[in-house]
Image 1 (cartoon, helix red, strand yellow):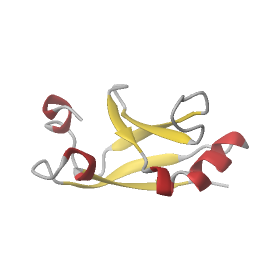
Image 2 (cartoon, rainbow, N blue to C red):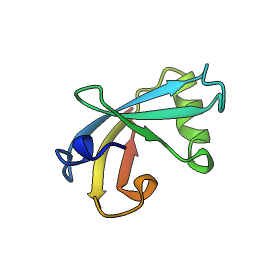
Image 3 (cartoon, one colour):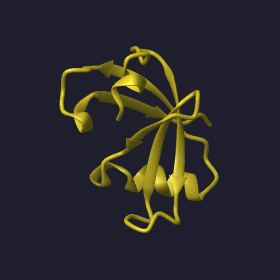
Length: 86
């Protein structure tokens, strides 16, 4: 995650979630993007199985920034909350 992107992210911001079933490294990859379509990263592989299954069924997944720590390691800078609506 680039520092220019993290500098304008704050707790509560809505995020975009995209299932990347054609990702060459992980067919269950879940990309996390800002509302400006800026790539933030991916859900950890250990956490992406259920969101990927939901996305494969056409269920919309919503996300927001739960916390930001710009000083942390890049893969630990954001905590993201996911939910679905029925």
